[in-house]
Image (cartoon, rainbow, N blue to C red; front, top):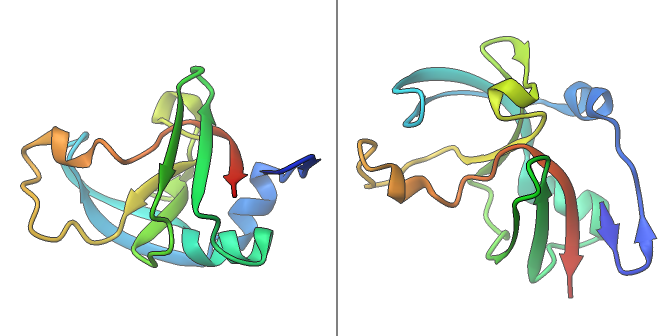
Amino acid sequence: MINGNETQKITISDLRQQSDTAVTLFDPYQGRDVEMRGLEFRRFLIDQFGEVPPALHFIAWDDYEVTLSGWDDPNWLMVTEEDGEPLTLRTRGPLRLVERNHGAREVESLREFNDWIWMIRSIEARW
């Protein structure tokens, strides 16, 4: 977690211990229902930064980078486990952001889920 000049390392094991939300939802990338366990991302951001930053910059383990806004939404889940197993790089982990409710989107269209973020290594608040 990065906030200006301050960097805080959080272990994956700590995040797994804090994961208090479990949902079963259809994962369009796997084409099946998956039980996901994690933390409500909005609440996690407030715990880390005191409020939800206007934008977040993500870096993934495969060096993918993106800056996105609009995180003040309780629908986002930071996933740490899937079907009872910890996420790994092979399973698009160790952290992944997904939406708990797909709304009216077509699950057959993967483009409608291109805002899910996989393999998260770092999250930086952009004020």
